[in-house]
Amino acid sequence: MNKIAYFLFPLLIVFLSLQATTNYPFPTHNTYYAGVIKPSNVTQTQMDQKIQTLYNEWKQEYLRTVPDAPDQAYVFYNEDQTSEPENAVSVSEGQGYGMLLAVYMAGYDAEAQLIFDNLFRFYEAFPSVFTPALMGWQQVEEDGKIVYNPEGGDDSATDGDLDIAFALLLADKQWGSNGFINYLEHANAMISDILEGDVNMEEFTLKLGDWVYDGDAKFGKATRPSDFALNHLKNFSASLGNPAWQSVINKTYSIINELFDNFSPNTGLLPDFSEFKNNAYVPADVKFLERIEDGYYSWNACRTPWRIATDYILTGDTRALTQLTALNSWIRSNTNQSPYNIKAGYKLDGTPLVSYDDLAFTTPFAVSAMINASNQNWLNALWSYTSAQPTSDGNYFANTLRLLCFLVVSGNWWTPLNLPP
Image (tube, rainbow, N blue to C red):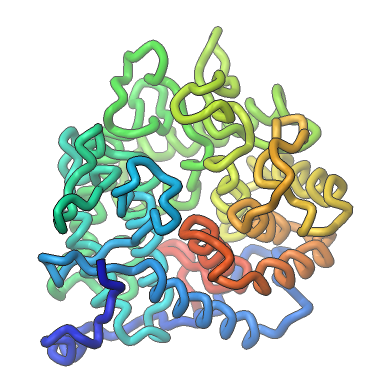
């Protein structure tokens, strides 16, 4: 399996010559909601340069071409072989992350549109068997070929679908939709199919994927807080004009506050999964879907400070502000204001699950810290600590989340509803 090398493509010069103008080149330095802060112990230029360095390392480490389809690319997520099966190479989550990074780094990266299009073609090559515009969630390598994981990798996972659709909306704004790929047309097709496959349309909740039947007693009303990309949903609503999206947004905020009020009022922590029991949303049972920590703040929920706080940062929507404020207050106190003390998982009462740290848990707290100036020193410490960690010390998940969070923290995150100046 060769690492990606776009400069070796025979027609690269032709492809680049046909690429559209980049409308919002990195760095964009967007305008955020009033009162939102950024790190003050580094300059804007230093933050931008750090992101460029980390992005270059990320491309080298995780971007791959398909051996028998050089116009397709994927994000290799299993370099440390901690995911099952051992021959797994790609998931829709990583594909979405890669497409987001390509579109945000356009302008700095002259190959960004080519990378994006190749990632898109890989997504197209692996449609969900249930909902055609969505992506099969996991691919493996067998005999030099990339194929669906035969053990259920051909249905969708909501997080990957959300990020791919959102990235397509961004691509339409970044490059327009009159080239090789009509980004907006594909985005709206995905947004429609997300409603059909990934949303319980009776409850207006985000399901775990299109494999879930709405009436299923266990999974039908269950949800995953790390999928709560609220600003994505607002952009979907604007693009498609379907009022159902507003209902999904309202229900998502309602579940955040129900879980916070009833299970983590002192910490603001949310669980990996939530299920609906006795007419209420509660943390999932042990091994509800993936592991014994399914009801705790673990390897899914670590993304929630980034997912949820980003909507406040862009729009000032206060519906999760109390939860985010409690989260910041608790983590600052719990760690004695030292990012080194953040652990890779907690019970919802704040009890650590493990004794070690991980960038996938540490960096998202920098996004939530941005909501109030009282967190300035904490945000500065988070930037200093997380930006100093070598890419070689982390894995795909940690290094990818760090980059995505840094785009927000540095002021370089934008959306179709919040375009840069």
